Image (cartoon, rainbow, N blue to C red; front, side, top):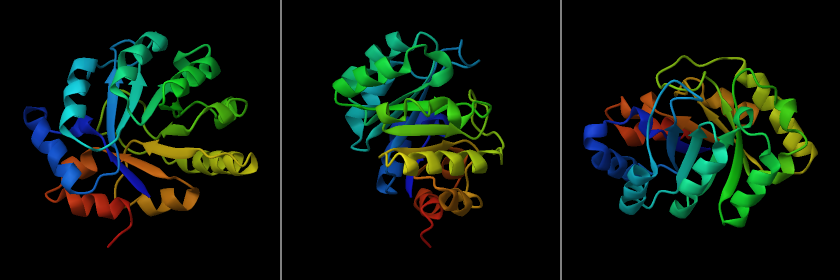
Length: 215
């Protein structure tokens, strides 16, 4: 299991210190939610902030776009060379074309599905993505309660990936903690995004290990 701490839950007044701490705690990815105040009712990080973040850490960036006008935002973040750049299926009319473009820039493209969006909606574009992010809360704010319906969606997506013999990571984001990590792994998740579970703890390394199921 890979763990991607979400800096949405970090202390913004000590952001560099927080990032250095999760790097020391062996985080696998750094999850960054970019919100535009339109697709979701919140505003977060722009490219200038994320550029500074990328300059102080070796952790690969996992940028999640919660935005309208997706193509414009993709071009803002491609120069930062994140490992993953994901966008919501609900916000893009031409997802295959956009995924091909992202991949042509040396970045792994991915699709995000809101809790209500069926897994079946991406069966014809699975070959164009390297990662699918399943939201286990309604997007826009951290600290929400995990939605159990995600378990069946993970199983369905894992079955679809295996049937197509595709090499696609399943990432899950929202309300994740040490109590549901093992069930998520059993369903087929590969990457867990966690904010409050990590940044509200007194020991980031132990919090990350609990999600990797290392005790």
